[in-house]
Image (cartoon, rainbow, N blue to C red; front, side, top):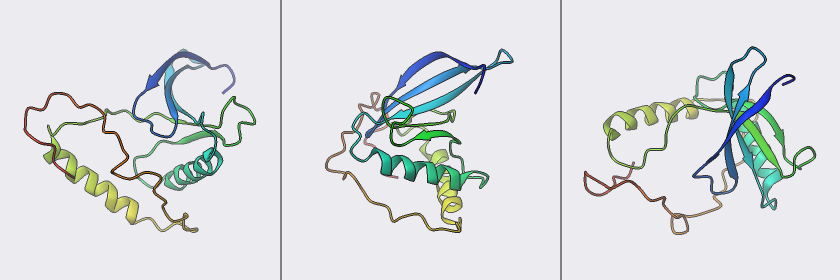
Length: 152
């Protein structure tokens, strides 16, 4: 927005299809807010993927499902060096260990129920998997204290 500036940029980890950065924005009133910028440097499918993501984020607005808010999207790189999507940042952390799984599973289940209860006016396109479990490289997890990883 006018009068705002980027005061910090931090690379985020875990994006498979795009580079992810958390941008801390200095606001006009002296405060800050965090946004996330998804940038596709491999542009082959970027326009389709970004339009699809922007549509999903727009669909989830006001539904009670915890999802980032869409700030802006440039799927063809008309205004950015690469196709990009800017969204609000959701606080949280990546969890790769089993600690606390008993609490997380019911929370995830409630989110799935809320997502599947949505009745959009226009149905999104069918999901297409761009990878398989055989091709995904699992990030290195912290040392396990509780034995093998559980599947949830």
